[in-house]
Length: 116
Image 1 (cartoon, rainbow, N blue to C red):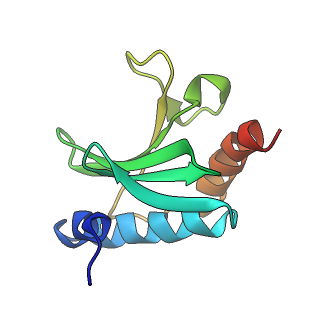
Image 2 (image 1 turned 30 degrees about the horizontal axis):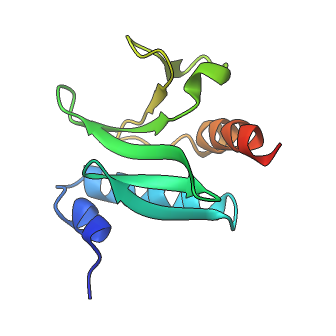
Image 3 (image 1 turned 60 degrees about the vertical axis):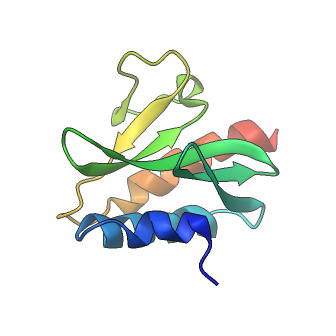
């Protein structure tokens, strides 16, 4: 049986589908305590049941991004706050190689906030 969160990925067109699925794998591989659920219609990743990050697609640019819940505590040049006070996003270009080093660095910096 297909979970509702799986439909989120399956309903995306390429190249966003492959990009989002790769990001999903990268996120889940960071720590055994990360679980995936769905909140507000998007994939939500939790660390020990606390919301950690989300995957979403920018409607204007039609590009995936990782939304870091505690982004205000993260300092990385590729994170964008926009008009958000708490969260920041890390944009990913679906037609380019995923910057795995950057993604894992940001994810682990964020995870360290939860591991304390």
